[in-house]
Image 1 (spheres, rainbow, N blue to C red):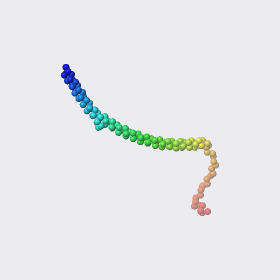
Image 2: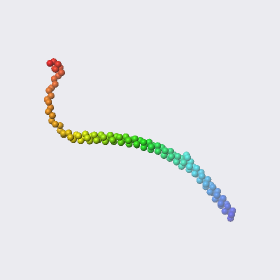
Image 3: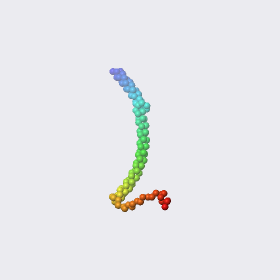
Image 4: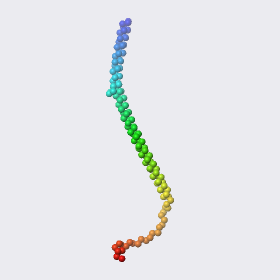
Amino acid sequence: MEMIADILLVAGALGAGFYCFILARRLTKFTDLENGVGGAVAVLSAQVDDLTRTLTAAQDSAGSSTKSLEELTERAEDVARRLELMVASMHDLPSKPAAQPQAKAEPAEPVFLRSRN
């Protein structure tokens, strides 16, 4: 009976050792930097770095665009104020021009006739 228990114990130990060997090989393949999750993590890390740089550049560009847009908006508001004043001053003008007497225009004599006199 003891001998059967020892044989089963050795068989169990050998089975557990073989199972650990298989798991160790799978784990090294899993964490391989070229094909496994380690490679995927490395690629994702590089992409995060690229995206961070791109985001920083986009933020800088947006900041300068915002500043330019604010300046243009201020200029447009100034022009709008001036136009409003011009339109308001146009309301003060009479709607029809006053009748002005027009002098009869005499026909102009040619230049060569003036020199003869």
